[in-house]
Image (cartoon, rainbow, N blue to C red; front, side):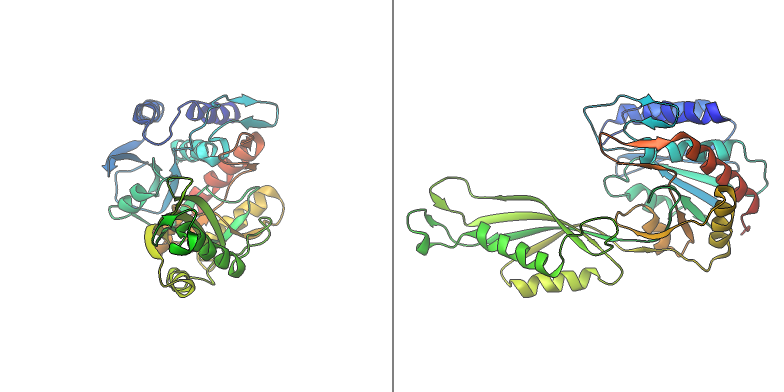
Amino acid sequence: MDNKLIEVTKKLMSFKTYKDNQEEFKKLFDYIKDEYNNLNIEEHEFNKKKCMVVSNQKTKKFDLLFCCHCDVVNTENWNITEDKDNIYGRGSIDMKGGLACSLEALKNANTKKKIGLFITTDEEIDGYTCKKLLEIYNTRFAIIPDGGKNFQFITEEKGLLQLELIMKTHSAHASQPWNGENAIDKLYEVYQKLLKKYPLPKSSKEYITSINLGSINGGNSFNSVPDYCSMKLDIRYTSETNKEQLLKEIREISKDVEIKVALETSNFIANTEDKNVKKYQEITEKILNRKIERIGCESSSDAVYFYEKNIPTIIMNPIGDYPHGEKEFVNKESLYKLYEIYSKMIKEVKEC
């Protein structure tokens, strides 16, 4: 099993499954259909994005459902390397290692319980396919290896609000700034006031609302006072904040700003009272022979769509770090442990 799990992880990583590279998604799905032909496989497509549901029984209602995305952020370096401890490369921790564990645990499950796996291709964009799949399928309990590191138990994930702010003023010649109003200055002042209210966290230990300025565009010449500026903000907010509050605060800073909501997701909050959630934590601590850390996670994932359906959900990653970065890695031994946890949970999960 050990070698097989590493082999599958590296094979999944070999497919360059980034946005719009549809041929690579097809190759990955063909590999899964060939390698896991003992399982029931159904394919879907939503908004021109493919996805797959793998299961041990043909059903629309599961006792346990794994959810993994196979899309990654594009990179110039697709090299896959390894040493005795780790596998390095794009998608290793986010999240093809977790996908390999889910596939192998499902393939080797000897149970009459209904076990399934969503494999989506757009989590790094908006997670739309997961949302649509949950309109067709349901589950008593879900597991998503897409948050934290070193088997941390994710108690909460931040909500996501992506905004485009637009400021329109009136132009003038650069030599006569008093005759115009600089839209870039005016909009940047809005951003600065937001930062005063929501200072940027200095590390993952500061679990607070954060606002990232992704881009700013305005002006078209040296000698004109710009009359237009747009700014793209990525806001990750905790459960102590909400979308309505954030929009209200922006409007209070400036009544002249136009706000366009590009993407929004709510917070994820773990149901720590659910029997399956408690059982998963118990199994994990027994296999790891230690207490697991409970944290809030600064990122967001498809778990929010399960939360919106009131489905108890575990978010937990194996050991690894630097998702989307040049140093991304996953620890081999932790993949074996994650597979062991999944296999045990399949046996212990409470049925519908």
